[in-house]
Picture 1: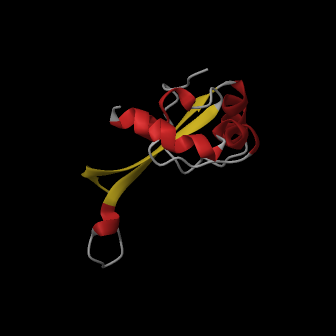
Picture 2 (picture 1 turned 30 degrees about the vertical axis):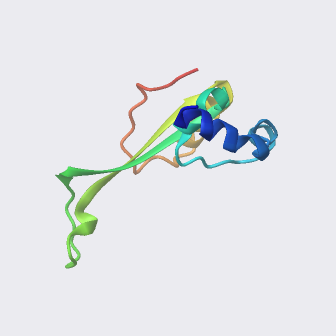
Picture 3 (picture 1 turned 90 degrees about the horizontal axis):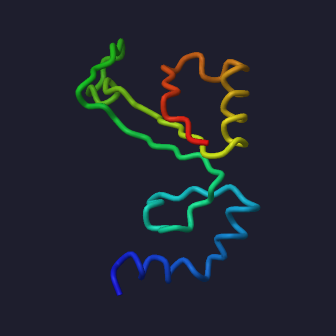
Length: 104
């Protein structure tokens, strides 16, 4: 068996179908789920762009001057509606928005 098969076998006792259907789940390495990712989901990718410096008025070690990025990619109508609602209510006003990755 390959490594991917071992990950899927390790997931069997977790009852993921029930968890994904009834709970909120954070999966650090979703590629290890194989074909078990829910169709309706919100993918969140966090990253630090080390090539972009932000203006920082604090006198610290400079670690906070890197641009932090959070990419939200909705899958399914339910998540698209939720993100549209949050945007319409102003929750994303301080963020730079890029809606090019909407996946229904």
